[in-house]
Length: 404
Image (cartoon, rainbow, N blue to C red; front, side, top):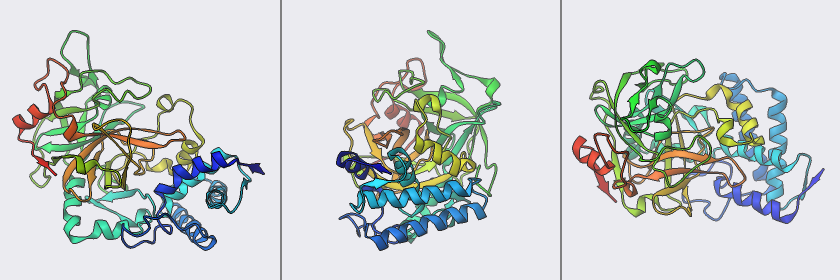
């Protein structure tokens, strides 16, 4: 048995408790449970049962090829982890890293922070325990706008033997998409002293499909031109929050009118902590080079969810407190391995885009980062491109903005 001191238990609780739903995903409204999750013995058992059922269904639906022994061990470690932070024990059979990894799985499988597969531009609530999120997204006032947002999200594919796609993007004009600069760096050459150029041998293209057991391709368009990007290169390892990790491309042809371009949200209130948001995009396998040492959490998530990378998903969560200033928001949605280029949209500001997801931390202080779009509109971009700021690009391309 591993004995854990009070400091490590408190650190684990601080990481997990804010992301646990009140009673394992059975809440009916987002307001219930603000005082904290129920971690009584019966509630812990109910939470573990929900996770067990989710993992069992995942096997039946061919969503995972994980060894059943791993699933059983994760559930045992997860139960002990919940009992640990509830003060019901101070020892666990597994070391703290394995307990933390198991709790991350519980959060993703008990309805607390689900990640729904998308089919036909709608979240499929059968693919992850929905809890109260299904009611929020099923509200008639929100449902159509969520579908509009999902229909505007696509995958940037490239022709590469080891990397079939570069990241996520989303539509802001009939032939204009937004993504990360670090995504663009995978298929754009930035020669010193010269204009950037698309690497045509990689054939970068934008595709609204790639749904699990759904549409493989939809309204695909080649990328034609880089219109704007952050002025500084994004480092291949680590995170430099001072960089503007944003890039905007023109497509070779406009998409059908059935896909409505998205507008940008502005104003401080759209990025306040506890604001409910969702991330929409295509989770990618975590890159060990960017993670440093692959964590136990990453190892377990890879084994459980390895068949799910690269498909369109919607993941709800909340904005969390940030110490990085007004241009960056933190959020706790389940991004699996990485959602580079995904949009972040508030449930109270639909269908306007609040942020652009650009990275996350997989260490003890797990979080995700996104640019607050309204706060980076006037940041200067890379010289020599058609537009010098995002604000100027919006004005020239007719991209709508709304202050909240």
